[in-house]
Length: 382
Image (tube, one colour):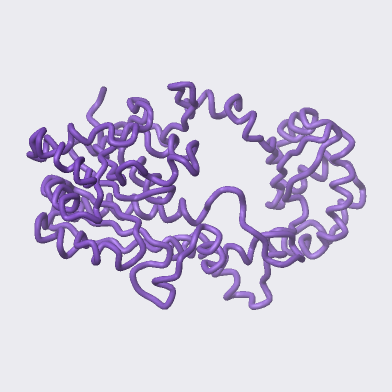
């Protein structure tokens, strides 16, 4: 196996649920050793609340139990910090300061430490102490205003936690950049990752249009002729993306609906003004053939069309299977790192760790004796 990109990099992961663990899972795929610090007996809340999510984003990590509300538990963490490169935490702002494990405290132990604090709204601002979840971050970040039916009110966002995962990606990107800078300066740094700020960046392409056109609404995005999800005769669905003019004209040729050949529909901005007249014609026509028939005929005519894959069938989707996007192990299929490249290997991971499975191993490596560790456990600190 080739050298992994982050071989020798050690990560202390104090995060739970999704945003932090997803970010540190990417670091693990790149070769970092990720040590997951969990509460004794309880662990990451996702273990019981979202067991499937936990398994997907904690593969190959090592689990150490420490009670950071005890002095002994904090002292053990500080021992681990000495040799750590990265610490990721997902507490609400102010918690690490109260516990005495904030960046300034740990920086004094290890100036090379890169410390990523992941929170809903960041360490500053009027929403700093407001609790929240993906739903809330999507709402404040502008994404929810673009969700729902074209003419309806804002609705709960898509079934994928876009805000949480945006925070994950920016955590990973920022950590990698900080590692590069540290290689030149020898110094770590504090990373204030706001999930809401991250989702705002995802919304930012729409903000350019909104500033150019004050009348811009979600209807301008969600209602475009020839660009949508269509039901077929066999009650399946296809996604058609005939947004550019050359794709539109190819679609019109295939559909063979004379009304769609109207010269007013030739160019996209003008065509979209007539979406209310055009879409019913397309939807009715799409009901005349089966899913497979439409996929073939539209593909044959170079019209962007794909199936709408269900979660129950996604593991058989040939596009993913042929690209090696699934990893089988322990009775579960996992999703591979999406970019085939040297230095990244998600396949080497085993199952997600049992709670505290590596406590003795990791604390021994940090210099604690077997009796020290037993003492920590007896006090409820590990």
